[in-house]
Amino acid sequence: MELEDIVIEGSHKNFFTPSVNFNAKTGICELSGESFLEDTQEFYKPLIDWLDEYTSKIKKPIAFIIKLTYFNTSTSRCILDLLNVLKDYEDDGGDVTVNWHYDENDSDMEEDIEDYMIDTGLNINIIPF
Amino acid sequence: MESENRLTHRTIDNVAISYTGIFDTEILSVLAKEIEGKLSADDKINKKVFKIFIELAQNISFYSLERELNADGSDMGVGTMIIRDFGKYFEFSTGNKTTMENIIPVMEKCDNINSMDHDKLREYRRLQRNMPAGAKGGGNIGLIQVALTANSKIEYSLIKCDDGAYFYIVSVRISKEPDPEEERPRRRARERVRE
Image (cartoon, rainbow over all chains, first blue to last red; front, side, top):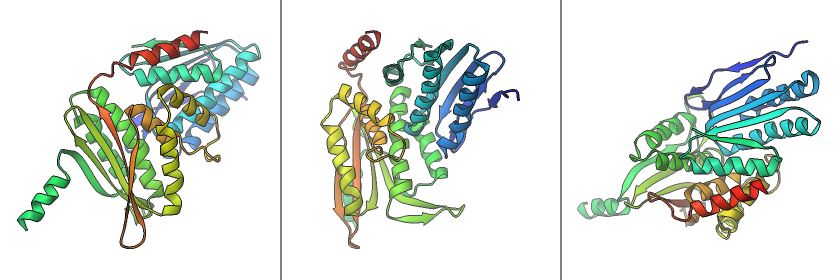
């Protein structure tokens, strides 16, 4: 069974759905926009499962790109879960790059990214825009 | 009658945005748009207030003792939100009915959060984030985020209602001026990451 790509178009309605583009062929996975969801776990579980599958079966390099401009605290736990899968993969010898783009005026976001680096032990490239 | 009006005016002066009623997703969305787009000319400040709003408004939706059914038939909390503009800062407050039993742990959490400086709060947020959602002691992350975002203490008060319940009010101040201290902890954190 081939691992299918995940493509979700983000929206900013009553809740804010992030855009997701996980590509199994290229290993480029992007999460962008805003994340404030009615059921955060339900949204992120398939993304975590996808990364689990990719890192245990496909085992090719992975570039994880985050361009979230806002996420609530409920989402923040799920981001940690995603990054922990990537850290486990790296510890097993996987090739992992994490680029996190943020608005340079958003010092809170910069601190948040630094805290994720401390928590996961992943080297995150912090890229202001 | 006139004196009553004046009293009302004095009680709620400096109001930028206020709302009382059901906190369902439709209303949250309307209020969020008001805050994000119109509260002030500074998008950075609006975003801070918006982030605080999301965390505290959700607490009303989930935990307010006073409940109402919305148009979809979902049972949602009723409460109040007031944003007041005092020139140099905004004061963001929410209020909702609760019981003494439910609110004591929340007030203890606020006291604990208020005893910490910025770096300690970041450490505490990391600790909470690593705990599974719903784990014992794991419900503080929204309040920690509020304190970190506002960069102020969380003030709270309780008013006894006629029906024996309590009205719980929580407030934070969001400064409109750049914080001269802000640069220092950030640099320290970056150095820690590099070590």
